[in-house]
Length: 323
Image 1 (cartoon, rainbow, N blue to C red):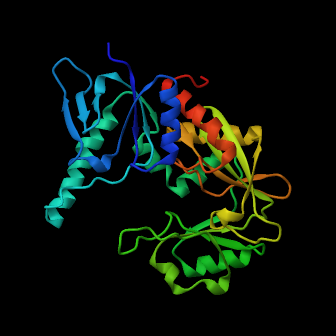
Image 2 (image 1 turned 90 degrees about the horizontal axis):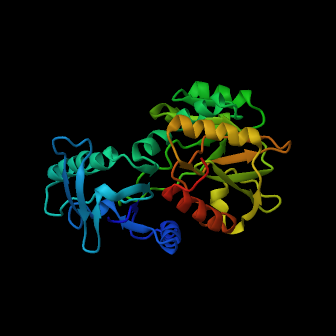
C-alpha cells in the first residue's frame, strides 16, 4: 500500500514551508510540495469521478512528483502564487483560462475530504475584517469602537468623539501598482482635519486608538496557542509595529484564558485550523483585537515561535495534535 501523503501547496520560495516540510521528512512522513502557479504548464491534472465513487480519484504530476489523490492525508494551503496561463493566449483567453483553472483545479482540491490547514475558501472568507471584528465581539474579545464608512462627515464626527485619538486601517493591505506588486499601506493616526472628500470614494475603517503598552502576535495551530510579546524601543510612537521590524524585541508570553477561549470560538466559526492574530495590550493588561486575524499569517521570523510552531504544524498535519 502506498504511504499516506501530506500535500503542501505554496510558492517555490517559502522558508516557513521549508521548516515544516523538513520536520515532516525527519519523521518519515511522505510530503509532496507544489504551487498552483505551475498549473497548467508545469503541473498536469488527471482526475476522474467514476460510477459508484463518491470522490474524485487521479493524480497531480510535475517533473519531480506524482501525487495520488487517494493517499492524501492532509493539505497545508500555505502561500501559493496565482495561476499562470499559457503566454501565447490573448488577454481575453488568459482571463478565461485562469477562471477555468480556478474552478476546475481549485474545485478539485476543494472537493477532497482530507484535513486542511486551512481550506482556501475559508481563508478567503476569514480575511474580511468586519466579519472578524463582529465574531470577536460575539466571542467576548475586546474590540475598540470602530467605524466603517464612506461618509466624510461621519468620519470627522468619529474623530471628534474619540479624544484619545483615531487610526485609519486599510481593509485589504494596500493597492496594487502598475507592475502588479502590492504597495504596503499601514495603519496610521488621523484627525478630523485629515478627513477629505476622498473618503467618499470607497469604504474606510476608522478605530479609536488603544493606548499600547505592547503588541502580541499569536500563532494558533489547532488547539495550541503560542504567543510572543512585541515591544518597540522606549519613546517610539508607532501605530503599526510592522513598519519597525529592525527595532522590535520579542518575548514569549502566556495567553489569558478569556483570549484563548475567544479566539478558539472565532476559528471554529470560521472553519480555520490555523491563524496568527495580532492584539494590542493596554497599560491595564487588557488585550484588544483590532481586526487582524491573519488566517494564513506569518510566524517563522520570530525565534521564539519558529521551533514550537513548526512542531505543532507537523503534528496537526499528521493528526497528532491535541483533540
